[in-house]
Amino acid sequence: MNLGQTLIASSSDTLAHTAAHLVASWIQEIVAQNRIARIALSGGSTPRAMNRILAGLPLPWASTEWFWVDDRFVEPQSPRSNLGAARTDLFDRLTVSPQAIHGMPFGPDIQACASTYEEILKKSFVLPGPGAGPLPAFDLLLLGVGDDGHTASLFPGDPSIDEVNRWVIPVREAEGREARLTLSRPVITAAKRVVVLAQGASKREPLRRAREQGSLHEIPSRLVQEVQGELFWLLDTSAAGY
Ligand code: 6PG
Image (tube, rainbow, N blue to C red; front, top):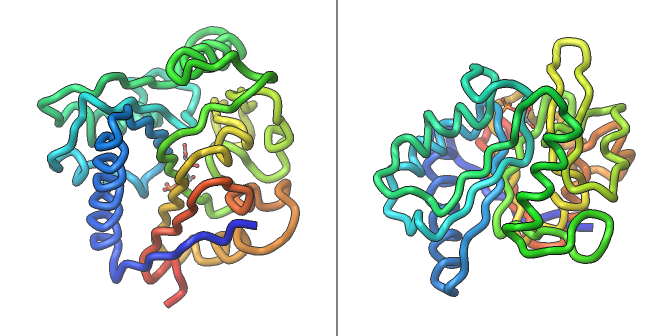
């Protein structure tokens, strides 16, 4: 059971700066080992300030490949798109292009889009594919936590949390929530370094429950306890309960 390491920032602004500089240092560390840094981003509102700060840091962008942990199944131009937000906050601000930016696809067939993203992972990580052999292990994978305890697009009560053969899963739409694509639980937990980024008092309870023993169907963010690599909780004082 991985309980991880916790870093608490005194404000949401300090959290964004601290997170950006930590991500930058980890990327520099990976590239210094002559490797491509493969990073998977989550969406939502919390990472946006961090991404805007990260865009201004001197990084070896050409040695980075960017992916998504999940995205809403919408056009990239949609205001709901995680890819669209990251383009606005991060990638469109860079003067040096990353080696690759692999947004999650959108199209008429969500199952086909999930398979397409699995093919992208197979090619980038040079692996045989889902269901057989090793999993894609991201160098750095960022997660948020929903007020209901979800993470990625693995929601309470949804069977997606149980899917362990596929790498990318279509998640059906539900009340007040569009369909999604998400990395599966095994791919998330195979990451070499997972960072849970959360701010605000509304995250206090879901974060507390995420650290408890209990059902993943009830609180899917409990899956971080299965992370095989390093686990970090980057929180502001409000989310940490101080
Ligand atoms: C998404 C995210 C999702 C997010 C949490 C927290 O697509 O919405 O990937 O898992 O991380 O819902 O979102 P906030 O940062 O907006 O609280």
